[in-house]
Image (tube, rainbow over all chains, first blue to last red; front, top):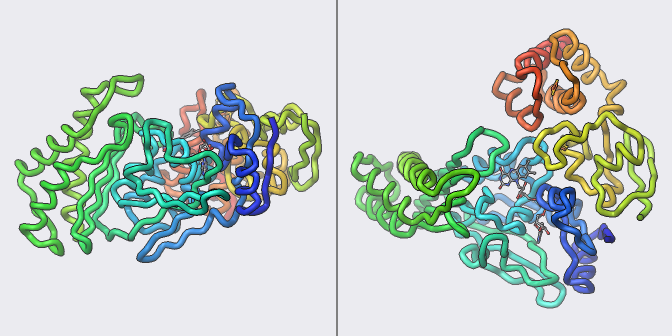
Length: 282
Length: 154
Ligand SMILES: Cc1cc2nc3c(=O)[nH]c(=O)nc-3n(C[C@H](O)[C@H](O)[C@H](O)COP(=O)(O)OP(=O)(O)OC[C@H]3O[C@@H](n4cnc5c(N)ncnc54)[C@H](O)[C@@H]3O)c2cc1C
Ligand code: FES
Ligand code: FES
């Protein structure tokens, strides 16, 4: 095993071009666990943890979030409510100070907490390599499967980009504690009133992040009726119907964190609350 | 093996290491700094907490060979730190120590908390210490120690 610590992004891309099998290390909160337990033994590690170029965050109309931005920095600097709420639930202060959004995208777990939000924000993932330059991947194409990001050998995640979507956002996460919990199930909902767009995405509810498109259409219809700039008053029946549509989109499994039936139930409950919260935020 | 050179507690420390080893292992087994405890090696317990360029992290999740150039401060490096001194006294006075295994990690995390906020609310304290596990005290006396240390810092 050898470790390279390039001093610039350009040098990192050079190292990855020479050795496309090299494994990138950012905050280490996933990769170091694997190494400590002997589950990963990379021949060559390229540390990008301290590259300032990957830590840039521009939080304007268009948000540009460098791959090396930590959860702690997201919490302090991003306005998108769902992402802030999700960042705050990640691990503990120690994990939030080290773990990065690029690492969440690289690990590409259906339980990755930023991923349903990136789906609900219609984010684009920008990757880069020496050989092919920059490549833009819509989030909907990012997850080829669990732990299979749309990254080619020699490529790095450079940043995630999305359009600031306004205040009508919600992130809900079910687990056994408020800290240090891998989601049993999670849900992100964004009502982008300016662009007249509703997105609902589920985490830990299937092999990849799942969009609940039938429920999105239903919510759009409800909002359309009252007007996109107005708060939504909901009937019990509408909330229940929305919850059913979201739960029906899930493809949950039984595992050590919860049963499929429980996941489907909790997803319905979270959906109803998310519709209530985003509907009220106008 | 490879030569690793780090800035630990204000001094340059150098030793041979396996390239894949964690900062925690390096601190304990190469440098003989046993204050940072090894319990889970997976970021869950916080007993290995250190400051890395001023930020609280789990040293078990830092690759030692990639930490060159960073300022690392362990619990040993807080010997003369005025905030940490009040934290240690308050932990003794409040009975926040039983077996003591989690204590160094808590002292580092509590020092970090009180540096930024002398009088954290109970919720702020719980959130700030949520990455540190204690199997003995039930936390109540540790939270009490945070309050006492904060008062002593006035
Ligand atoms: C105690 C604990 C609690 C946790 N809690 C949560 C939680 O609540 N929610 C959650 O979502 N996650 C959680 N995690 C998982 C982890 O913290 C996150 O997935 C985090 O975002 C990983 O980022 P990192 O920078 O530490 O990645 P690393 O461990 O450095 O890397 C992870 C993977 O991504 C690749 N990678 C990293 N950066 C890039 C890049 N720029 N380009 C291409 N590939 C890259 C690496 O090669 C590796 O395969 C937890 C982990 C621990 C140890
Ligand atoms: S040993 Fe590092 S967090 Fe438990
Ligand atoms: S005092 Fe024993 S683990 Fe905390």
